[in-house]
Length: 249
Image (cartoon, rainbow, N blue to C red; front, side, top):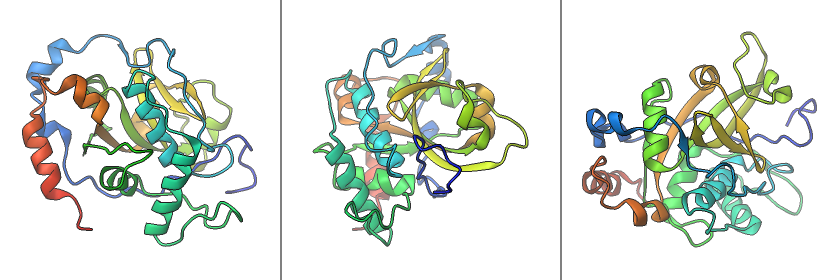
């Protein structure tokens, strides 16, 4: 990481790979839209405690975002440990070419979000396996709000600028120098809140419109257990297609 980064802030999201399937192909938006509430409060008023998951010391944001998504999707019941997140980070960086060494700090190079999601689906994180994931068009505010509501969270990748280092609310600032890639889950809409470095962070719509590079809707087991009869998502088709499109071992 560059020396000018604040010590408490660690990034670690590598450039995006394209999603293999898009959630909008499995959702009847005309039916879903009238039901989307004005305010989406998956964090229950921020009452679900988030964890840092070592992301103030290493660039494991892509894996930390997994742990915090599981916390919120399970209503705070599922607690992935620091060791679970670290184990995933070591394994995924190894798959990508150079495993992070917790003893020396070598190869703290971050991960690709799609690789993290595929690992979560195939191998699991802390004993939890992701059921499926599908892309979200982050340039479409309707998709962002609708799918945050439907899926309990969005796992997104943003390109932060230096302006965000000092902002209480992340907002787009034209011309601010690049800082780097970061992975975060969006939990709440109106007011907008995402999760990073163990806390809920407000953000503006302009921040997402200009700085979100990728977005993924997640079908976690906790979400599926509570929503398997959701009439707005064609889950049978989504899960069938996800299985057929999974990368080979």
